[in-house]
Image (cartoon, rainbow, N blue to C red; front, side, top):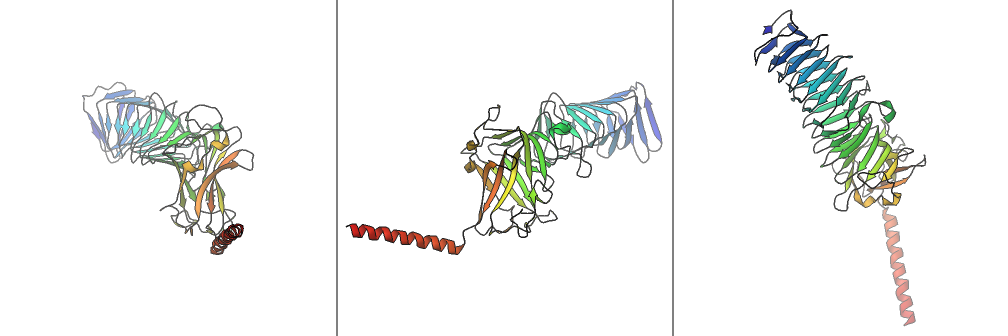
Length: 404
């Protein structure tokens, strides 16, 4: 069944044989209203679900196909390499299906998914909502998922109490940045696994990084809000830095700003539980003022620098449990279990200086994790200390000889 020009309208119950190919080409369009298909193939061109709705079961939509959801649509056991566009005010239900690498799901209205996985692209536009229920939402290797954008922040992924498993994909969340906003990625944890990267300025209800997966606040750099932030065994927090702050030469840059370095603001729990055998890592990535890989223009290795990378907002709780709500004493933060990594990512010459972390009271009276740079002692200072040590040793030796 094909159309190469004009429109073919399929209205009401349509009985089609198993394996039918629904093909459109050129300016052709197939329109569906009140129709139901099973074991069909959507091949090329434009396919539009109209106000009467449509249901597709055990169907494959190929690359090069556009499926416009302008009325209620249900996809069950559907594999798609198509561009699926859910219009504002419309609803798509996608049950137990998947997107190939060519697939592109644009949610301007509402998409309700269960048993869904993607290695393609998902874009939840401002005002759009992707609701997940029943199973984990799996975004595999090569997947690209965008919630809002820098130019148009907004959009929501509601995990329905389940987990978003980012298994090698990219998640850029620029939904609203606070828990009160109702946007971002919420009602479940984002687990960033091997090869995965989660970033953006939108709110994250909970983020876990493992097996080298990376959480990176902001859009190189910037700030992000989180209900729960974790320093867990094997986790990684990347901090982009394009300006060194008040001790820079010249001074400039601030925490959580587009000029400065990344920061996570936590309104729920900061969970600290790395082990002696498996540390947490903070990776520093230096950027030029145009946010390209390169050296931080005003980083001065002869001066100390202090960069706030995690801030507990009023009411947030520091705890050492993977779960639970019991507060922990701040002294339980053990900087020896947090590695600050710079090799290959922070391109400025440190001239022998070193980075470490601390957990200290900040200017609003809560606590923050700081990355601290300590410059190497000046040669004169080292020689002076060495000379003082030798002199002290000689004085002790003379006293011993005198007593003898």
